[in-house]
Amino acid sequence: MPETRQDLAKLTFGVLTIVLLIGASLWTLRPFLGATIWAVMIVVASWPALLWFQARLWRRRSLAVLAMVLILLLLFVLPLTLAVFTISAHADEIVDWFKSMLAQGLPPPPDWVAQLPLVGPKLAAAWADFAAAGLAGVEARILPHTRELTGWLLSKAGGAGALALQFLLTVVIAGVMYAQGEAAATQVLRFGRRIGGPRGEASVVLASKAIRGVALGVGVTAIVQSLAGGIGLAIAGVPFAGLLTAVMFIMCIVQIGPILVLLPATAWMFWTAPTGWAIFMLVWTLVVVTMDNFLRPVLIRRGADLPLLLIFAGVIGGILSFGLVGIFVGPVILAVAYTLIDAWLQDADTQAG
Image (cartoon, rainbow, N blue to C red):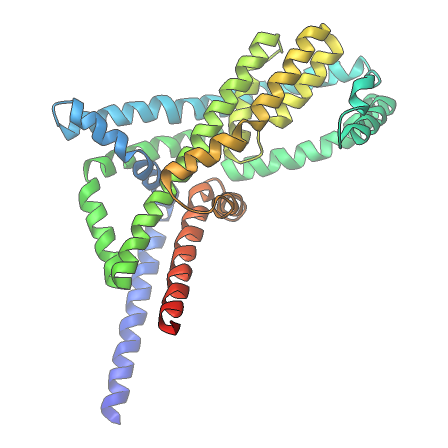
């Protein structure tokens, strides 16, 4: 009996020591955790591209890593940083332009608005209410929601300078991971195997596939939608087309979509532009807004064969729970949990049979 108590105390203190070491390590690395998580997601999602570059650059890893870092700077850091700085620099100008547009008075809704299926009567009624309220009424209704949305985005993204620094740190860490990717992957697989055997190793592989699927489904869809929407705005002659494209990109990344930009732009076209251009903008908006309905599922399926609802719930829940990095963390958590539960149920069915 005393020997049993001694073993129990030894085990308890051993587990407590490990927990304290892990907690202290995470606390020490806390300033780098966000950038490290983003770097892991980027490296896992773009690892096939690194191997492609390596095969064509005389099989030299250093040249392939340099190429990937430069691509990240051009495609990841530069656009997002410019988008944040552009939005910050033109915020007052946008507000002044919006107020001047409202000061001219909102015309009554066209007859075709009320004839739209499902939403036509409600949209026409809301439009008529805004037109009757005038500038003061519109400001009273919109500005509180605008402040809430702006405050939420700023709380998630932080200041523009801090965000740019975080992106640069992410690229540096990603470069190191590109150079040592195979060794890191081996250690992670060993860890998964040590915890759960073959299933633990399979969960690690599934997590990497989920990351790649979300990166393709969310990232590529956001780029395509925002670029398509920006092209339409530029062709139609909508003011601040470049700035609105940046706003659409951020909204697509956080799964809001481009409709909050394209719908007011379309209404502005019907208000001020010739009818032909306004109809063009309406058709273009419908195409861009519905583009993700078929593009995102195809891209996600290329990365991971998981239920689309599971991935979408992981993206939305991850954003609300963890901020922007939750775009990848949420789906990975749900994907691993879904796979383990499914394997557990299959074992029960096998034993019962």
